[in-house]
Figure 1 (cartoon, helix red, strand yellow):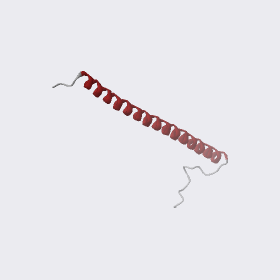
Figure 2 (cartoon, rainbow, N blue to C red):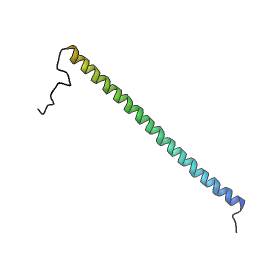
Figure 3 (cartoon, rainbow, N blue to C red):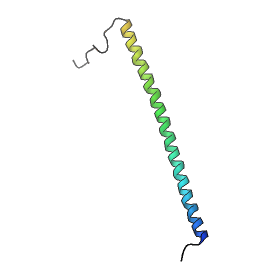
Figure 4 (tube, one colour):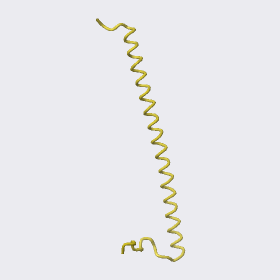
Length: 74
């Protein structure tokens, strides 16, 4: 015997509730990943700025260029 309209509606409501929860979980994940990416971008930019500043100080002081400097194990 086919499901009654009330049973079908109940099943649809259950499926909708599961779908909504899944969407909420995915939204939380996307938000966290976005915040993590922004944090890494800021950190990378700070590191790049530090490297530029260090290189500028070396170039201004007449020191050895980083490209010409031998690694410590030589």
